[in-house]
Amino acid sequence: MRFPLRRSHLDRVLRGGLIAAAVAAGSIFLLVFLFLLKEAGPSFSNPGPKAMLTDADWYPTTGSFGMLPMLLATLATAFGGLLLAVPVGVGAAVFARYFAPRFLAPLLRRLMELLAGIPSVVFGLWGLLVLVPGISESLGGPGQSLLAATLVLALMIVPTIALTADAALRAVPSTVLLGATALGLSRGSVVRRVALPTAAAGIRSGILLALARGLGETMAVLMIAGNKVQAPYDLLQPVRTLSANLALELGYASEAHRSVLFFGGLLLTTTVLLSLMPRFLAREGTL
Image 1 (cartoon, rainbow, N blue to C red):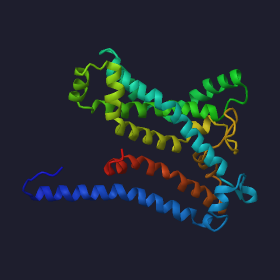
Image 2 (cartoon, one colour):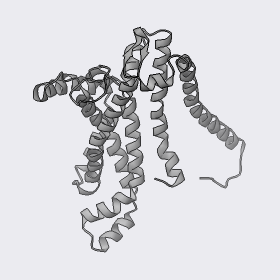
Image 3 (cartoon, helix red, strand yellow):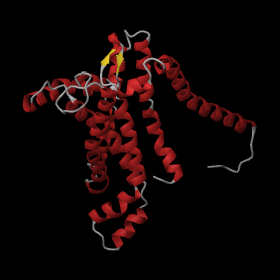
Image 4 (cartoon, rainbow, N blue to C red):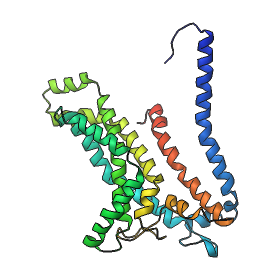
């Protein structure tokens, strides 16, 4: 929004400072990307992107750097968690906005905010001490598994979806809702046919942001996924994600092994692109 004010010296200083801040913010991503590209450079020639993305084995000591199982595990945990979290998060936002008693709605929102601020290691500890033994006793297997990682990840991203959905529903004009009510629609019909379609763009933005967090989550998944490099063919078997692999092996990796790990970091930078997608899509009018 532009203000038709006469420029003073202070205005010019403020404008210059804001431009510098915007350039600096955009440069951070570029610098990180260039750093990852530089460190991952040797892996493009040996073993090469094709081998890293198609081989099924990960044995760095023998020169086998297949990242496909970890890439599939990353996608499985993120999309599995999203599949569980979206109905819960959107449902919580709808309930808090349109159905909860007045004294309860603010408490629900504060609870979601508190849940969003809990460190991921705390979720990991809860999953390791409570969820993993429960899965092992009730369903069998080692407990540390794709299922455990998916459930904990879903719990972590529910607040993101709920808070963004609540903000999108709050932005729906009250005149639209009153007009729908005046036409004789019930509260449920107003929510289903008017409020949710009107707030769909903001809700989709929150889902994409939650997906970005799910793809990049490290500590909680590292603690409860089992960290075995294999394709995610069974919910009860352990898996290892790309972010967990970086955390586990970067400390002692060297030469070719190290460059391949940085190539994995390049793959994970797609989470940043996913977090920017809502802005770009909304500007183009597709959200």
